Image (cartoon, rainbow, N blue to C red):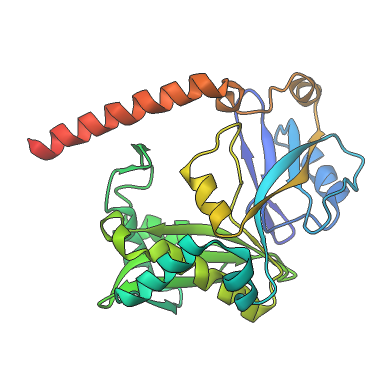
Length: 296
């Protein structure tokens, strides 16, 4: 459904939760107007949730809230990031990409970009030890998936001999003061050429050039898990920043759900030692399944 020029997604069956599409770079101008619109929309919505915009991290609304976390890089100049905000390893990896022939360039949204995205997504069915949900993506699906917020998004491709081996999509908020790495992915077969590190560097360069003060790389942590992706964000200068996430109950069911924590994902309620064992079992199963498939 729509509220003005903003799309609102409603998810869940037992507890129906509404949120703004692109909520890390799309914010309600007046949350009360959105709440009033949801109350009279004719569709059952139990909770409305939204994040507070940076740089304000102190709660400024009276709605119930929990503290959520983001991976945030404060951007001033590219040189400051390169010399002062990152460690030597990602700096060396970005240099390595250039030495191995990786070329970065902004690319307009169109068939060339969509074909490249499709090839990157369809390289392997397994990423980070689990099934990659976008494997098998069609051209049309790639066009729909990557073609949102075109009026405030920038695409950068990493190319090797004119073949796109990785890409990022940067989507900015309406004030152009913060941007989110909505998509960043590179081909696993070219990991030795460090295209992802080069893309991060280009994202920072793009933000600095456009006067974007904050670059967001999704969440810093998911639940209690700290993994290789968290480490990758940290060495590239991203820091954990806790911001209020508001939950506005719109029904009695919504009030009860929030009171008892039922708005949280089931996976976030599993103790981390148990969740880690499940991840190890899942990775071993996928490794065995796809190794056998490749050998047969």
